Length: 112
Image (tube, rainbow, N blue to C red; front, side):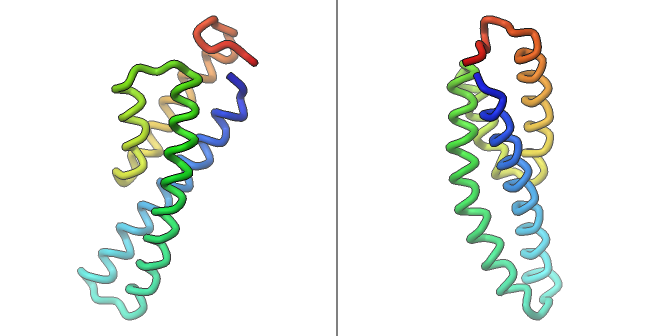
C-alpha cells in the first residue's frame, strides 16, 4: 500500500469532520438560536458535506480494501463521517495503526 492512499484518506477525514461540526453548529444557529442568515450557511455547508462525504467514502473504502480490513472495521470507518467529531478520532487511530505497519514493512500491508 502506498502512503498516498493513507494521506488522501486523512485529508478527507479532516475535511468531512470539520464540515460535519460546522453543519451541526449551523443547525443549532438556524433552529435553536434563530440567527438570521444561518439558513443560507446551513444549506451551503450541508451540500458541501454531502458531496465531500461521498469522496470520503470512496477513499476510506479504497484504504480499507488495500489494508485488508474486516467488514466491521470497514463499516466503522465509513460511518465515522456521519458522527460529529468521530472522524477525527477514527482517523487518528487508523493513521497510527497503518503508519506503524508501513514503517515495519509488514507483509499485511505490502508497499507497492
